[in-house]
Length: 181
Image (cartoon, rainbow, N blue to C red; front, side, top):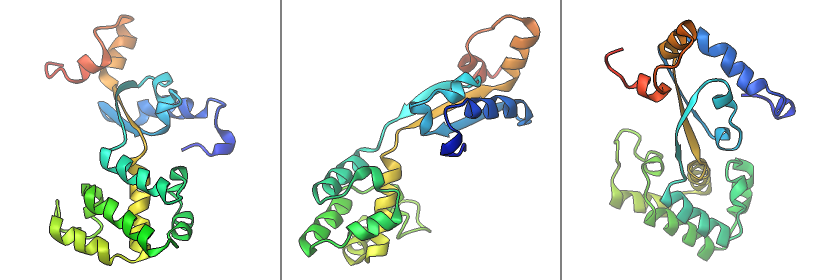
């Protein structure tokens, strides 16, 4: 990560570009939120494979949070979320119902860490009984799920072959998934 004070001077792509050859693995994967707005990893030689948009459940919950007065851009701040959760009982119940009707594995993991998918009926009960701190953690997770994530990939061997031969043999993604390499 590059400190905000030092962003937009080319450090991100340079750090990635200079560290890729040092990884010691044939393939490198990266998931980045900022790559949606700034192609620093692509400039460093990685290939953008796909963008993962926010989950439908997180968007639905964010709409309810916005309706009760939350700034959805600040959901990552525990302090902000806890302060905003001092709502009227009806608004707090509306937020809880939004979580109950928009079940997502990341939310269920907060209550059922040992079970991969949790228990839907018990989840609703746990949400209704949740204290403000637990609800704040769920809202913070919702904020993370609202971010569009970019998946990037680099095949180190392909880049080395390309560099040695001076010519390109297909796309990076084709080479990455070619089992005959």
